[in-house]
Image 1 (cartoon, rainbow, N blue to C red):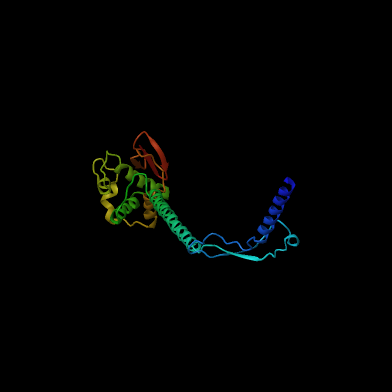
Image 2: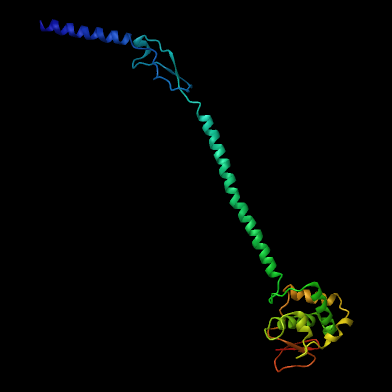
Length: 232
């Protein structure tokens, strides 16, 4: 009796297995698609057994899923990149402008002189007359040294602070040629000597060298240039 029951159970299980295999779905659907998606994938239905054993024909299965939202995102990324590039260029422009300003300041400093003196055109003309009267036959260096003596006096705190007062000072008298200034005929040589000192191109005398003459006026002779002794 037991053998009959066992045989019936085995037969029932075999029939159920065959029925299950024959009813396998050949097309599988994916979960409900997300709104705004559409993309194409292709594949095949499959079973663990070979085609010969199951007799099931494999068919193409079409799966649809994708998103069109990616393209706007890429555009936004590009726009953000351009914005960042523009933002980064502004500091570079500011740095370049700062470098130009610094260069101009350095240039102005180089073209100045150690006394910080500037002269008007009329003052340059007046000084050229005195330099011509005092040292027209001297070398260029000698004329430049005369100009340095004038500037040393203007910045000394002992003598007057203006060009006119230094050149016209009577007591003591350094520039005795002052009274003949209207008869002077300065040349380009005198003007070039003055501009060389104004532009900071010379450094001939100490800042306390206040005298020059055809003979030493003090015991402290710094240098003799041409026919003049320059003393402090």
